[in-house]
Amino acid sequence: MRNESAAILDIRSNEVVFLLGAKGVNGTFVIASSHTERYEGFSNGAFLDKQSLRKAVNDSVNAVRQNYGGTIETVHVGVPSAFITVITKGHTVSFSSKRRVSSADVEYLYESGWNELACGRRCIRRSAMYFSLGDNRKYFSVNELCGTATTSLQGGLCYYCVSDGFHDTLTAILNDLGIQEIKFIPSTQAQAVYLMSEKKREGYAFLLDIGFLTSSFSVIYGSGIVHEETFDFGVGTVLVELMEELGVDLATAEEILAASNISGGVVLGELQWMNDRGDLQFPVRLLNDIIKSSLDELCEQIDRFFEERYKDKKTSGLSVNPISMTGEGISLIKGCKEHISKRISRLTEIVVPDLPYFDKPAFSSRIALLNMAIADKEKQGWWRRIFNGFGGKKK
Image (tube, rainbow, N blue to C red; front, side):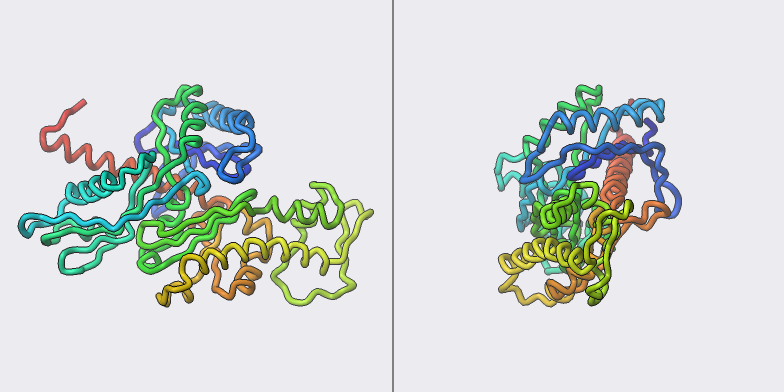
């Protein structure tokens, strides 16, 4: 596969997406091929049926291979928050005399911080909430940091660790497909970096990703995740609630949800919903109440998240900064943005890729992963050119 392209396997809570993409012009991407397959999903941090997952990955990869016709040597796998543990650490390294910070110093900061943790977990990525120097100057970008003179370097560091179960399962599936080089990327961190501007991330920013079976809530600072939690709530939760309350089957529940919108005000009591066949009807007010009641479960968990972690914090950004929302649930539960905003008394906004056709919440994770994978490849290429320029090993 050409160096400027990347292969992405996006694992969502009820589907997997395999795609090949490359960088386009003006911040766009060119998708060479993409295929989506449903599977049983995951809940409570575990896959419900690994054979279902294996079949979905196999079918997706093979479909793209047939369309692409080239060799796929490396796959970047998006790891959902349910399988990620974020470890944060404030760490400082001191220099014997004042010197200009180099990329090697930043690398040493990360490495020595990780060695001090000695946690025995499998770290797949590192990022920083911020960097600061001996005179307390704060930086959010390594590019701005490097070249600055100081006697010490400090960082609010984040280490992203993947669960052994997820790592081993996906590695085995992809190895059996003949793919040996596998790189894991934390999905929510990729989304935070891609969907939110650097300026927004210089204070506390919030990302709510509503999926089909699970949702995640992340607190972002700089390029790092401060806190993150996964909730067993999604579109499927609402569908089950409709099925149980109304005594209907899954297909009817999906039809009801597709036609509903809970963003409006009071619904007239006599307004009725009727199915396509015309043999079943329910009051619209009842349907909206069921959907809202189900969505309240997520709102209560978000409230609890803030209460447990930030009730004693006085930072203004924690209360005034909007919650950025994305994921397939935004489109499938119409009006959920407005309901969540009212229910938890916080501003909300929908964030999506700024791309034609892909400007939908359901596409956020796959495009964010593609963006991060391509950025990683470019960074590795840059380092290789520098290394070779100084007499490094050449192929």
